[in-house]
Length: 318
Image (cartoon, rainbow, N blue to C red; front, side, top):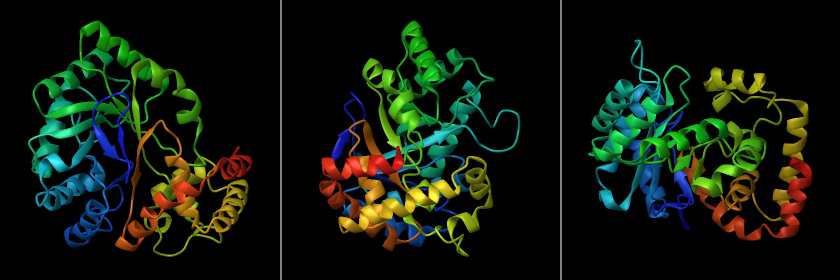
């Protein structure tokens, strides 16, 4: 397992991390989550990601129950604030919700602090100076060591950094975007000016495009699969065009490349992301320990992705 710096900053996280979206509290109870977390940690994963919105806080609660068995200095724990529940002040990036949301997350996680707290989405209803001040206060109060963003545009990131400079506040150190072979533009094009200018890192999610890059949806949607269990995810993917005939043609070609190098499609997909030096960590989402074990093999597959193989992949996904 490689440990990568988060951008230019000193924090080091495992190149594969374990997330909890759609799994902890939905597909995994405390006992099964514990098995996955222990396996992840024993395999070198030190980075565990969650959010106040995941399973309405249950994901944080489950993660907190399990992480009690580890030394705090051995793990990196991150959460995200935006969707805290019903009510006019329980969503968004106001100072009130950011502080109260962080306090509530820490209670569920049973932690004194998180390593990174993310603004889970941009908030057009809150002035950026209010959000920046609140995040700076959270850090100066010791509730989090760093802050970051998730799914912000390059323009929004630029505005946040400029406001941090103006107000002498701590800058965001990391962005958490979707990134996979089927969703590339934001990471590879839009954010290019941001990396060098501000030294931001990336903790990317949805590396397998909600399961598309496992090949299991090539002949339809199996009963009990993620897209079957979570119709809102299926609806979003249909609307975004990810379930098109063209997409599945690409997936079948990528599967052929994976077989050529003795890997599964999911391992190839994860290894491809790890070849991007801008990526600090790839967040895995697993519903059983066997999936985690298969995904961990991507670390070996990464070494098989020669320049020729990467060019072959590029021809398919370009």
